[in-house]
Length: 446
Ligand SMILES: NC(=O)c1ccc[n+]([C@@H]2O[C@H](COP(=O)([O-])OP(=O)(O)OC[C@H]3O[C@@H](n4cnc5c(N)ncnc54)[C@H](O)[C@@H]3O)[C@@H](O)[C@H]2O)c1
Image 1 (tube, rainbow, N blue to C red):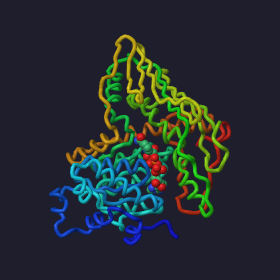
Image 2 (cartoon, protein in one colour):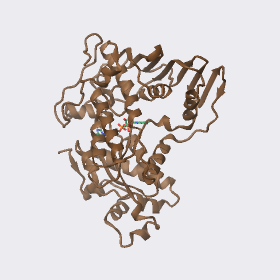
Image 3 (cartoon, protein in one colour):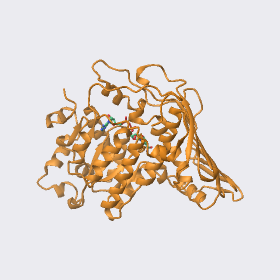
Image 4 (cartoon, helix red, strand yellow):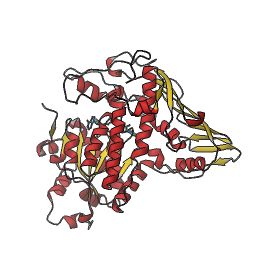
Protein backbone atom coordinates (compact mmCIF):
# COMPACT_ATOMS: atom_id res chain seq x y z
CA UNK A 1 0.00 0.00 0.00
CA UNK A 2 1.32 3.41 -0.88
CA UNK A 3 2.05 5.49 2.20
CA UNK A 4 1.86 8.69 0.22
CA UNK A 5 -1.81 9.48 0.33
CA UNK A 6 -4.73 11.27 1.90
CA UNK A 7 -7.43 9.74 4.03
CA UNK A 8 -10.84 8.66 2.87
CA UNK A 9 -13.90 9.65 4.88
CA UNK A 10 -14.63 5.98 5.53
CA UNK A 11 -11.17 5.37 7.00
CA UNK A 12 -11.51 8.48 9.11
CA UNK A 13 -14.72 7.24 10.67
CA UNK A 14 -13.49 3.66 10.93
CA UNK A 15 -10.53 4.88 12.95
CA UNK A 16 -12.91 5.34 15.85
CA UNK A 17 -12.68 9.07 15.87
CA UNK A 18 -14.81 10.18 18.78
CA UNK A 19 -15.37 13.61 17.35
CA UNK A 20 -15.85 12.53 13.77
CA UNK A 21 -19.37 13.88 13.53
CA UNK A 22 -18.46 17.29 14.88
CA UNK A 23 -15.35 17.55 12.78
CA UNK A 24 -17.01 16.53 9.55
CA UNK A 25 -20.09 18.62 10.21
CA UNK A 26 -17.87 21.56 10.98
CA UNK A 27 -16.02 21.15 7.75
CA UNK A 28 -19.03 20.69 5.53
CA UNK A 29 -21.04 23.49 7.10
CA UNK A 30 -24.16 23.25 9.23
CA UNK A 31 -27.39 25.04 8.44
CA UNK A 32 -26.66 27.49 11.17
CA UNK A 33 -22.98 27.15 11.72
CA UNK A 34 -22.69 30.44 13.54
CA UNK A 35 -25.34 29.40 16.03
CA UNK A 36 -23.84 25.93 16.50
CA UNK A 37 -20.52 27.53 17.33
CA UNK A 38 -21.88 29.69 20.10
CA UNK A 39 -21.73 32.92 18.16
CA UNK A 40 -18.00 32.76 17.54
CA UNK A 41 -16.88 34.86 14.64
CA UNK A 42 -16.65 32.83 11.43
CA UNK A 43 -14.96 35.66 9.59
CA UNK A 44 -12.14 35.79 12.12
CA UNK A 45 -11.05 32.19 11.84
CA UNK A 46 -7.38 31.41 11.32
CA UNK A 47 -6.94 27.96 9.81
CA UNK A 48 -4.11 25.97 11.31
CA UNK A 49 -2.22 23.13 9.63
CA UNK A 50 -0.09 20.75 11.70
CA UNK A 51 2.89 18.90 10.18
CA UNK A 52 4.33 16.19 12.44
CA UNK A 53 1.71 14.66 14.73
CA UNK A 54 3.90 13.28 17.51
CA UNK A 55 4.22 14.47 21.08
CA UNK A 56 5.27 18.02 20.33
CA UNK A 57 2.95 18.49 17.38
CA UNK A 58 0.02 17.48 19.55
CA UNK A 59 1.07 19.98 22.21
CA UNK A 60 1.65 22.75 19.68
CA UNK A 61 -1.77 22.26 18.08
CA UNK A 62 -3.48 22.34 21.49
CA UNK A 63 -1.56 25.50 22.39
CA UNK A 64 -2.46 27.17 19.10
CA UNK A 65 -6.17 26.53 19.74
CA UNK A 66 -5.85 27.75 23.31
CA UNK A 67 -4.08 30.92 22.17
CA UNK A 68 -6.91 32.19 20.01
CA UNK A 69 -10.63 31.32 20.20
CA UNK A 70 -10.89 31.60 16.42
CA UNK A 71 -7.85 29.47 15.60
CA UNK A 72 -9.20 26.28 14.03
CA UNK A 73 -7.40 23.03 13.37
CA UNK A 74 -7.93 22.58 9.64
CA UNK A 75 -5.43 20.07 8.27
CA UNK A 76 -2.90 17.58 9.60
CA UNK A 77 0.06 15.75 8.11
CA UNK A 78 2.44 13.06 9.25
CA UNK A 79 4.72 10.65 7.47
CA UNK A 80 2.72 7.82 9.05
CA UNK A 81 -1.07 7.76 8.78
CA UNK A 82 -1.56 5.99 12.10
CA UNK A 83 -0.24 9.05 13.95
CA UNK A 84 -2.99 11.36 12.68
CA UNK A 85 -6.20 10.37 14.41
CA UNK A 86 -4.70 9.74 17.88
CA UNK A 87 -3.15 13.19 17.67
CA UNK A 88 -6.44 14.74 16.59
CA UNK A 89 -8.19 13.06 19.50
CA UNK A 90 -5.60 14.28 21.99
CA UNK A 91 -5.85 17.84 20.70
CA UNK A 92 -9.64 17.62 20.98
CA UNK A 93 -9.45 16.24 24.52
CA UNK A 94 -7.14 19.06 25.49
CA UNK A 95 -9.49 21.66 24.05
CA UNK A 96 -12.41 20.06 25.84
CA UNK A 97 -10.49 20.05 29.09
CA UNK A 98 -9.41 23.68 28.99
CA UNK A 99 -12.15 25.56 27.15
CA UNK A 100 -14.83 27.50 29.05
CA UNK A 101 -17.51 26.06 26.76
CA UNK A 102 -16.03 22.73 25.68
CA UNK A 103 -18.73 21.68 23.20
CA UNK A 104 -18.77 25.04 21.48
CA UNK A 105 -14.98 25.15 21.37
CA UNK A 106 -14.73 21.71 19.80
CA UNK A 107 -17.43 22.46 17.21
CA UNK A 108 -15.82 25.74 16.30
CA UNK A 109 -12.12 24.91 16.52
CA UNK A 110 -11.83 21.33 15.31
CA UNK A 111 -12.50 21.45 11.56
CA UNK A 112 -10.30 18.64 10.32
CA UNK A 113 -11.87 16.94 7.36
CA UNK A 114 -10.67 13.50 6.24
CA UNK A 115 -9.70 15.05 2.91
CA UNK A 116 -7.27 17.21 4.81
CA UNK A 117 -5.45 14.42 6.67
CA UNK A 118 -2.27 13.57 4.81
CA UNK A 119 0.50 11.02 5.15
CA UNK A 120 3.60 10.07 3.17
CA UNK A 121 6.45 12.31 2.13
CA UNK A 122 4.11 14.73 0.34
CA UNK A 123 2.07 15.36 3.49
CA UNK A 124 3.61 18.75 4.21
CA UNK A 125 2.98 20.13 0.77
CA UNK A 126 -0.64 18.99 0.94
CA UNK A 127 -1.22 20.51 4.36
CA UNK A 128 0.37 23.79 3.26
CA UNK A 129 -1.85 23.84 0.17
CA UNK A 130 -5.06 23.05 2.06
CA UNK A 131 -6.08 26.66 2.52
CA UNK A 132 -4.49 27.21 5.93
CA UNK A 133 -3.23 30.50 7.36
CA UNK A 134 -0.80 29.14 9.97
CA UNK A 135 1.53 26.14 9.80
CA UNK A 136 2.91 24.32 12.84
CA UNK A 137 6.16 22.44 12.07
CA UNK A 138 6.82 19.60 14.53
CA UNK A 139 8.30 16.94 12.28
CA UNK A 140 11.92 15.65 12.63
CA UNK A 141 14.26 18.60 12.08
CA UNK A 142 15.94 17.15 8.99
CA UNK A 143 12.77 17.89 7.02
CA UNK A 144 12.17 21.31 8.52
CA UNK A 145 14.11 23.66 6.23
CA UNK A 146 12.26 22.40 3.14
CA UNK A 147 8.87 22.53 4.87
CA UNK A 148 9.54 25.99 6.25
CA UNK A 149 10.50 27.24 2.81
CA UNK A 150 7.32 25.83 1.27
CA UNK A 151 5.23 27.42 4.02
CA UNK A 152 6.63 30.94 3.78
CA UNK A 153 6.69 30.88 -0.02
CA UNK A 154 2.99 30.02 0.17
CA UNK A 155 2.40 32.99 2.47
CA UNK A 156 1.79 31.11 5.74
CA UNK A 157 2.61 32.23 9.27
CA UNK A 158 4.72 29.54 10.94
CA UNK A 159 5.46 28.05 14.33
CA UNK A 160 8.77 26.26 13.78
CA UNK A 161 10.00 23.80 16.39
CA UNK A 162 13.68 23.67 17.31
CA UNK A 163 16.24 22.77 16.04
CA UNK A 164 15.45 24.31 12.69
CA UNK A 165 17.96 22.34 10.59
CA UNK A 166 20.61 19.63 10.80
CA UNK A 167 23.32 20.94 8.44
CA UNK A 168 24.83 24.10 6.96
CA UNK A 169 22.70 24.08 3.79
CA UNK A 170 19.59 23.70 5.98
CA UNK A 171 20.58 26.68 8.13
CA UNK A 172 21.22 28.80 5.05
CA UNK A 173 17.80 27.82 3.74
CA UNK A 174 16.17 28.77 7.05
CA UNK A 175 17.89 32.17 7.00
CA UNK A 176 16.52 32.74 3.53
CA UNK A 177 13.05 31.60 4.64
CA UNK A 178 13.25 34.04 7.53
CA UNK A 179 14.07 36.79 5.06
CA UNK A 180 11.12 35.81 2.85
CA UNK A 181 8.82 35.77 5.88
CA UNK A 182 9.98 39.27 6.83
CA UNK A 183 9.49 40.52 3.30
CA UNK A 184 5.95 39.12 3.20
CA UNK A 185 5.03 40.34 6.69
CA UNK A 186 4.57 36.78 7.98
CA UNK A 187 5.13 35.75 11.58
CA UNK A 188 7.79 33.14 12.26
CA UNK A 189 7.82 31.86 15.83
CA UNK A 190 10.58 29.55 17.00
CA UNK A 191 10.26 26.60 19.34
CA UNK A 192 13.25 27.74 21.40
CA UNK A 193 10.77 27.94 24.23
CA UNK A 194 13.10 29.11 26.99
CA UNK A 195 13.23 32.48 25.28
CA UNK A 196 9.55 32.76 26.31
CA UNK A 197 10.01 31.70 29.94
CA UNK A 198 9.74 34.64 32.31
CA UNK A 199 12.36 33.49 34.82
CA UNK A 200 14.98 33.06 32.12
CA UNK A 201 13.96 36.30 30.43
CA UNK A 202 14.50 38.10 33.72
CA UNK A 203 17.87 36.39 34.22
CA UNK A 204 19.20 37.11 30.74
CA UNK A 205 18.02 40.70 30.99
CA UNK A 206 20.05 40.95 34.19
CA UNK A 207 23.08 39.56 32.36
CA UNK A 208 22.64 41.93 29.44
CA UNK A 209 22.46 44.84 31.87
CA UNK A 210 25.91 43.92 33.20
CA UNK A 211 24.91 41.68 36.11
CA UNK A 212 28.22 39.78 35.98
CA UNK A 213 30.26 42.50 34.26
CA UNK A 214 31.90 41.38 31.02
CA UNK A 215 31.22 37.73 30.22
CA UNK A 216 34.46 35.72 30.25
CA UNK A 217 33.27 32.11 30.13
CA UNK A 218 30.08 30.06 29.94
CA UNK A 219 29.40 26.47 30.86
CA UNK A 220 26.23 24.69 29.75
CA UNK A 221 25.14 21.11 30.25
CA UNK A 222 22.45 18.81 28.92
CA UNK A 223 23.26 15.52 30.59
CA UNK A 224 20.47 12.96 30.71
CA UNK A 225 20.13 9.23 31.22
CA UNK A 226 18.63 8.51 27.83
CA UNK A 227 16.33 9.27 24.98
CA UNK A 228 13.27 7.79 23.26
CA UNK A 229 13.47 4.01 22.96
CA UNK A 230 14.77 2.88 19.55
CA UNK A 231 12.63 0.47 17.53
CA UNK A 232 14.06 -2.74 16.10
CA UNK A 233 13.72 -3.03 12.34
CA UNK A 234 10.54 -4.87 11.32
CA UNK A 235 10.26 -7.15 8.31
CA UNK A 236 8.98 -5.14 5.37
CA UNK A 237 10.45 -1.84 6.54
CA UNK A 238 12.54 -0.20 3.84
CA UNK A 239 15.72 1.67 4.77
CA UNK A 240 13.78 4.93 4.67
CA UNK A 241 11.04 3.59 6.94
CA UNK A 242 13.59 2.11 9.37
CA UNK A 243 15.38 5.43 9.66
CA UNK A 244 12.33 7.67 9.86
CA UNK A 245 10.75 5.45 12.52
CA UNK A 246 14.00 5.81 14.49
CA UNK A 247 14.62 9.38 13.41
CA UNK A 248 16.31 10.47 16.65
CA UNK A 249 19.11 7.96 16.04
CA UNK A 250 20.17 9.03 12.54
CA UNK A 251 21.98 12.33 12.28
CA UNK A 252 20.53 13.34 8.89
CA UNK A 253 17.10 13.35 10.56
CA UNK A 254 17.79 14.56 14.10
CA UNK A 255 21.18 16.25 13.79
CA UNK A 256 22.35 13.96 16.66
CA UNK A 257 21.37 14.70 20.25
CA UNK A 258 23.57 17.75 20.55
CA UNK A 259 21.48 19.38 17.80
CA UNK A 260 18.12 17.80 18.52
CA UNK A 261 18.04 18.16 22.28
CA UNK A 262 21.07 19.86 23.85
CA UNK A 263 20.53 22.81 21.52
CA UNK A 264 18.25 24.21 24.24
CA UNK A 265 21.28 24.69 26.52
CA UNK A 266 23.42 25.89 23.63
CA UNK A 267 20.72 28.46 22.95
CA UNK A 268 21.24 29.85 26.48
CA UNK A 269 24.89 30.36 25.56
CA UNK A 270 23.83 32.20 22.39
CA UNK A 271 21.33 34.27 24.36
CA UNK A 272 23.95 35.26 26.95
CA UNK A 273 26.26 36.33 24.11
CA UNK A 274 23.46 38.40 22.52
CA UNK A 275 23.42 35.95 19.60
CA UNK A 276 26.88 36.97 18.42
CA UNK A 277 28.53 34.03 16.66
CA UNK A 278 31.70 32.43 18.05
CA UNK A 279 34.81 32.41 15.89
CA UNK A 280 35.48 28.68 16.11
CA UNK A 281 35.01 25.53 18.13
CA UNK A 282 36.67 22.18 18.78
CA UNK A 283 35.13 19.13 20.38
CA UNK A 284 35.25 15.51 21.45
CA UNK A 285 32.47 12.96 21.34
CA UNK A 286 31.67 9.33 20.80
CA UNK A 287 29.38 6.39 21.54
CA UNK A 288 30.52 4.87 24.78
CA UNK A 289 27.33 3.20 25.95
CA UNK A 290 24.85 2.94 23.06
CA UNK A 291 23.89 -0.67 22.37
CA UNK A 292 25.57 -1.92 19.21
CA UNK A 293 22.31 -2.70 17.42
CA UNK A 294 21.16 -1.19 14.11
CA UNK A 295 18.31 0.80 15.64
CA UNK A 296 20.65 2.96 17.71
CA UNK A 297 21.76 4.35 14.38
CA UNK A 298 24.89 6.42 14.01
CA UNK A 299 24.49 9.09 16.70
CA UNK A 300 27.01 9.67 19.48
CA UNK A 301 26.07 9.43 23.16
CA UNK A 302 28.34 12.23 24.43
CA UNK A 303 29.81 15.50 23.26
CA UNK A 304 32.01 18.15 24.83
CA UNK A 305 32.57 21.32 22.84
CA UNK A 306 34.69 24.43 23.42
CA UNK A 307 33.53 27.54 21.58
CA UNK A 308 35.85 30.51 21.25
CA UNK A 309 34.43 34.00 20.84
CA UNK A 310 36.11 37.28 19.95
CA UNK A 311 38.30 38.58 22.77
CA UNK A 312 39.06 35.08 24.01
CA UNK A 313 35.69 34.46 25.65
CA UNK A 314 35.09 30.73 25.85
CA UNK A 315 31.94 28.68 26.17
CA UNK A 316 32.03 25.04 27.20
CA UNK A 317 29.15 22.72 26.47
CA UNK A 318 28.73 19.11 27.58
CA UNK A 319 25.87 16.76 26.77
CA UNK A 320 25.50 13.03 27.19
CA UNK A 321 23.02 10.17 27.23
CA UNK A 322 24.32 7.75 29.81
CA UNK A 323 22.16 5.49 31.96
CA UNK A 324 22.80 5.41 35.72
CA UNK A 325 24.54 8.79 35.76
CA UNK A 326 23.40 12.14 37.21
CA UNK A 327 21.33 14.41 34.98
CA UNK A 328 22.10 18.09 34.73
CA UNK A 329 20.69 20.81 32.51
CA UNK A 330 22.01 24.13 33.69
CA UNK A 331 24.34 27.02 32.88
CA UNK A 332 27.06 28.93 34.66
CA UNK A 333 27.97 32.32 33.24
CA UNK A 334 31.20 33.76 34.57
CA UNK A 335 31.98 37.45 34.22
CA UNK A 336 34.48 40.06 35.34
CA UNK A 337 32.28 40.98 38.33
CA UNK A 338 30.32 37.89 39.19
CA UNK A 339 28.94 34.48 38.37
CA UNK A 340 25.39 33.72 37.26
CA UNK A 341 23.92 30.30 37.93
CA UNK A 342 20.98 29.32 35.71
CA UNK A 343 19.01 26.33 37.01
CA UNK A 344 15.70 26.30 35.14
CA UNK A 345 14.46 22.97 36.49
CA UNK A 346 15.08 24.06 40.07
CA UNK A 347 13.68 27.52 39.21
CA UNK A 348 16.76 29.04 40.83
CA UNK A 349 18.64 31.83 39.12
CA UNK A 350 21.27 33.78 41.01
CA UNK A 351 24.22 36.09 40.59
CA UNK A 352 27.04 36.11 43.12
CA UNK A 353 29.69 38.81 43.05
CA UNK A 354 29.78 42.58 42.99
CA UNK A 355 26.00 42.86 42.40
CA UNK A 356 24.35 39.88 44.10
CA UNK A 357 20.93 39.04 42.64
CA UNK A 358 18.28 36.39 42.93
CA UNK A 359 15.52 35.92 40.34
CA UNK A 360 11.99 36.60 41.51
CA UNK A 361 9.84 36.17 38.39
CA UNK A 362 7.05 33.61 38.50
CA UNK A 363 7.18 30.61 36.26
CA UNK A 364 4.91 30.51 33.19
CA UNK A 365 3.91 27.98 30.54
CA UNK A 366 6.54 28.86 27.96
CA UNK A 367 4.98 26.64 25.28
CA UNK A 368 1.66 28.42 25.60
CA UNK A 369 3.35 31.82 25.64
CA UNK A 370 4.94 31.12 22.25
CA UNK A 371 1.53 30.61 20.69
CA UNK A 372 -0.02 33.54 22.55
CA UNK A 373 2.68 35.79 21.10
CA UNK A 374 2.39 34.24 17.63
CA UNK A 375 -1.39 34.62 17.33
CA UNK A 376 -1.37 38.10 18.86
CA UNK A 377 1.22 39.18 16.28
CA UNK A 378 -0.97 37.80 13.47
CA UNK A 379 -4.10 39.49 14.83
CA UNK A 380 -2.31 42.81 15.24
CA UNK A 381 -0.65 42.58 11.86
CA UNK A 382 2.69 43.07 13.58
CA UNK A 383 4.84 40.25 12.21
CA UNK A 384 7.05 38.50 14.73
CA UNK A 385 10.24 36.95 13.37
CA UNK A 386 12.60 34.70 15.36
CA UNK A 387 14.35 33.54 12.19
CA UNK A 388 17.83 34.90 12.76
CA UNK A 389 18.36 33.68 16.30
CA UNK A 390 16.78 30.27 15.76
CA UNK A 391 19.05 29.63 12.78
CA UNK A 392 22.15 30.81 14.66
CA UNK A 393 21.51 28.75 17.78
CA UNK A 394 20.91 25.70 15.59
CA UNK A 395 24.17 26.32 13.72
CA UNK A 396 26.05 26.57 17.02
CA UNK A 397 24.98 23.02 17.84
CA UNK A 398 25.68 21.79 14.29
CA UNK A 399 29.22 23.18 14.35
CA UNK A 400 29.84 21.41 17.66
CA UNK A 401 28.73 18.14 16.07
CA UNK A 402 30.87 18.77 12.99
CA UNK A 403 33.91 19.39 15.20
CA UNK A 404 33.28 16.22 17.22
CA UNK A 405 32.58 14.03 14.19
CA UNK A 406 35.69 15.18 12.31
CA UNK A 407 38.09 16.03 15.14
CA UNK A 408 38.82 19.31 13.34
CA UNK A 409 38.58 22.89 14.54
CA UNK A 410 35.49 24.33 12.84
CA UNK A 411 35.01 28.03 12.26
CA UNK A 412 31.59 29.68 12.21
CA UNK A 413 32.04 30.49 8.53
CA UNK A 414 32.99 26.89 7.71
CA UNK A 415 29.87 25.63 9.43
CA UNK A 416 27.61 28.21 7.81
CA UNK A 417 29.06 27.64 4.35
CA UNK A 418 29.39 23.87 4.73
CA UNK A 419 28.53 21.79 1.67
CA UNK A 420 27.54 18.78 3.77
CA UNK A 421 23.97 18.41 2.54
CA UNK A 422 22.41 15.56 4.51
CA UNK A 423 19.24 15.68 2.39
CA UNK A 424 20.78 15.88 -1.07
CA UNK A 425 18.97 12.66 -2.00
CA UNK A 426 15.20 13.24 -2.00
CA UNK A 427 13.33 11.11 0.52
CA UNK A 428 11.06 8.29 -0.66
CA UNK A 429 10.09 4.94 0.83
CA UNK A 430 12.67 2.46 -0.41
CA UNK A 431 16.40 1.88 -0.34
CA UNK A 432 18.56 4.57 1.18
CA UNK A 433 22.15 4.69 2.37
CA UNK A 434 22.26 4.22 6.15
CA UNK A 435 24.92 6.53 7.58
CA UNK A 436 27.77 5.06 9.61
CA UNK A 437 29.28 6.35 12.85
CA UNK A 438 31.66 9.27 12.31
CA UNK A 439 35.32 8.79 13.21
CA UNK A 440 37.35 11.84 14.24
CA UNK A 441 40.46 12.24 12.12
CA UNK A 442 38.89 10.17 9.34
CA UNK A 443 35.48 11.68 8.73
CA UNK A 444 36.13 14.66 6.46
CA UNK A 445 35.06 18.20 7.20
CA UNK A 446 33.08 19.42 4.20
N1 LIG B 1 10.63 22.93 22.31
C1 LIG B 1 10.67 21.84 23.02
O1 LIG B 1 10.89 21.84 24.22
C2 LIG B 1 10.46 20.52 22.34
C3 LIG B 1 10.00 19.41 23.07
C4 LIG B 1 9.80 18.21 22.39
C5 LIG B 1 10.07 18.13 21.04
N2 LIG B 1 10.52 19.23 20.37
C6 LIG B 1 10.84 19.16 18.94
O2 LIG B 1 9.70 18.80 18.20
C7 LIG B 1 10.09 17.97 17.11
C8 LIG B 1 9.28 16.69 17.16
O3 LIG B 1 9.56 16.03 18.36
P1 LIG B 1 8.53 14.98 19.01
O4 LIG B 1 9.02 14.75 20.39
O5 LIG B 1 7.15 15.42 18.79
O6 LIG B 1 8.86 13.70 18.13
P2 LIG B 1 7.84 12.53 17.72
O7 LIG B 1 8.67 11.43 17.20
O8 LIG B 1 6.90 12.27 18.85
O9 LIG B 1 6.99 13.19 16.55
C9 LIG B 1 7.52 13.44 15.27
C10 LIG B 1 6.41 13.11 14.28
O10 LIG B 1 6.83 13.51 12.99
C11 LIG B 1 6.45 12.50 12.08
N3 LIG B 1 7.24 12.63 10.86
C12 LIG B 1 8.39 12.00 10.49
N4 LIG B 1 8.79 12.43 9.29
C13 LIG B 1 7.87 13.34 8.87
C14 LIG B 1 7.70 14.11 7.70
N5 LIG B 1 8.57 14.04 6.68
N6 LIG B 1 6.63 14.92 7.61
C15 LIG B 1 5.72 15.00 8.60
N7 LIG B 1 5.83 14.27 9.74
C16 LIG B 1 6.87 13.47 9.86
C17 LIG B 1 6.66 11.20 12.84
O11 LIG B 1 5.96 10.13 12.26
C18 LIG B 1 6.13 11.60 14.21
O12 LIG B 1 4.75 11.37 14.32
C19 LIG B 1 11.60 17.77 17.25
O13 LIG B 1 12.28 18.67 16.44
C20 LIG B 1 11.88 18.10 18.69
O14 LIG B 1 13.15 18.63 18.92
C21 LIG B 1 10.70 20.42 20.99
